[in-house]
Image 1: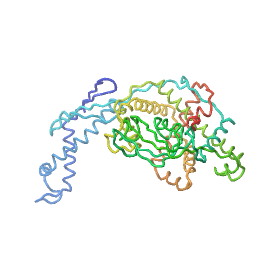
Image 2: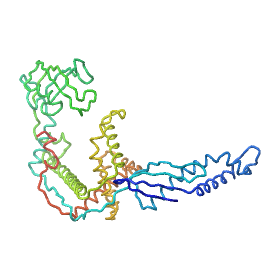
Image 3: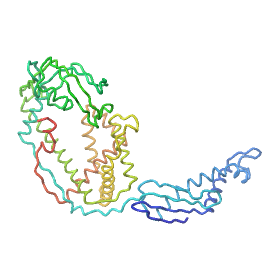
Image 4: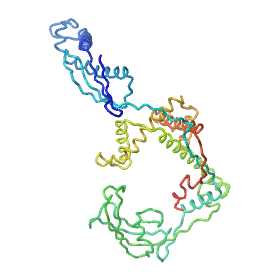
Length: 435
């Protein structure tokens, strides 16, 4: 077999391969003889037909099969001979496939880049530090109170935290549209339940009052039929209700499942939950720092084929989440190119780091992660069995655990600077609770 390698720019390579005709002929003869031992032909006993008859009947088909097999096997042999690591499958351009002639073709493909990792000890990483303060617990309890308001009708203009009960009807270019109409719809002002332009019109509105809101739907609005369009809503306020928050007492604690110990026990359980949340948030921030540092300090030229595959995966994933019914409803590919390039590069860097560090998945951590997941379900034993019987699910757990191990391994060796932070900053509690 003759092989000629050409670098055509970047990571693209071109292999010109020639497989001798006698090698092809030998393989064709071998397969025809095998067929001849069992084939039946009219006028001949089974297995006794002359090779000329067998070749006439099966020669063309067998030659095609041999050529297809040799295309695969010769490419595999060629890349091994040239010590290449293809990133994606090759584009095969046949030159000669005819019976009796050498098999010649050109295979064009991208190779994986050579990775020279920056020393882990040179990576600069910020590790957030924080603790759950009494004030954080108090804020969380206040947030819990806000989740259980009671409402009383008032005869005044609506203000933030009030609940407004209203009817509305929307039109785009004078035409009603699906989802644009509502009756007895409750809207809590300041809670971000409706678009800003709609909510702003409700400020100061009194029971029985009608108002008009002109609302522009964002281009990325979840309702695709109205995204990017402007609607006019006619709104009738039927009731304005003032929020009353419950007292922080034992009855309140019982509402949140605390049967004994009252408010103090609730406060203790809230703190423990917040500390677990903070621990997870610190780990997530540290993971992000490690990944940023690995990406920043190990610049790579990445195979465009892998980037394109990743772009398509991201498009399909978003499309599935947003209910896209066909390819025309998928988001534009351009917005995914940079994230896809980063994902591919990090995947290559992490793979090389795992290889060079010889890290192996910790089975005890896998078991602990499985127990945590299963324990979050009421039927934990059943869920545990379901995961153990699902190879893909277990591979995902193992992958997550191995990534955790890698982060720990990097943090043990990198240049770490502790950065003081707070529960709110790390968990975005203040943002999520609306305070």
